Image (tube, rainbow, N blue to C red; front, side, top):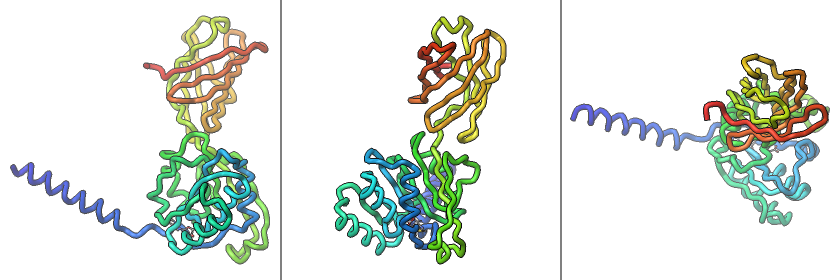
Length: 283
Ligand SMILES: C[S@@+](CC[C@H](N)C(=O)[O-])C[C@H]1O[C@@H](n2cnc3c(N)ncnc32)[C@H](O)[C@@H]1O
């Protein structure tokens, strides 16, 4: 009975803690400072945003990033913003500009927003906030999602592209003309051991690869018939994996896509292309 009471008390304390956390005011991720319109256009161009994209802006201000993505690039999406007045302005602008069927703006804490629908995620937030969001981006965004950050990098992530320019408009905002745009691509998870399935023409020894991963960086070894061979030029870009394996006098160039826990692709050797696949070892 005493143990039962203790459990009930612990549950009540945990529930009270959760309720308190739910009622806490949102963390201020940055003041309202709109990105200059030329930066908005450059960000969306850098990510090659198009009609198939769903753009989410975290801390959407007056809505200009999502509105431009819809109006100029044909995308759909939404913006989240804690300042209700800015959200109202953004929704009115969406109506006025004829894109309200494709974009909307909500008054919501960006840290509590489900971002899993994004194919492009944008932010212009304080540097510490950008980095507070790293785990959320990896947990919720699909591999291949493009992430754009105005001015502040995601520490430890290697950008796909990076643009630096000088803009007079920025002096009023940050005191300097320097403007940076970082474009990242969310990496798939590939770390671990994989058993390869190849055309018998490429050799009869079973091949197992062991991939190590640190965000977008991958490296690895292959075990081919009891011998260890390093993988050359391993590259991960979203859900696309490339590497080269030189074994048994053959040079094999692998390209593949990681989907639903398996890898499938094409391997080229001596000018001949054949399919290959890989499944996690032990399955
Ligand atoms: C620097 S402005 C960027 C506006 C817009 N994204 C742009 O680039 O023009 C950052 C915005 O984030 C909003 N913001 C700050 N903390 C937030 C939070 N926890 N949830 C949602 N919005 C937030 C601010 O109100 C502000 O409008």
